[in-house]
Image 1 (cartoon, rainbow, N blue to C red):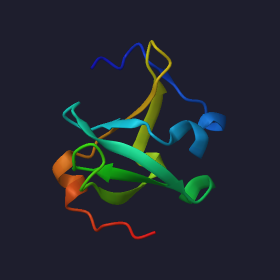
Image 2 (image 1 turned 45 degrees about the vertical axis):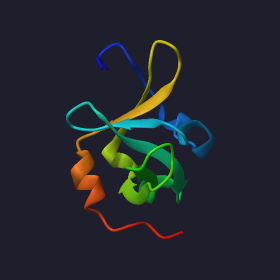
Image 3 (image 1 turned 45 degrees about the horizontal axis):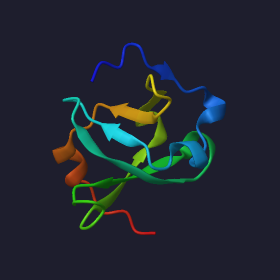
Length: 98
């Protein structure tokens, strides 16, 4: 996916209501997961990403700093994120416990 024409979200848009459900694309530009929810507020916020699984079944939640994700809107207005993490790197992270 070519992200060059996508509009980056403003800091004020980085809210759980906007970010939850966003598709996350990894270093190889393949889908690596979906933002389940956001933990915390401000600089220490973390995105909890569901990695792996199929249709939400068997997915492993992992926590990554919100700053490791670049959130943007595509031409249709859908929010997604890009990260330098690969799917395998995310799968190797410890599981996030609520």
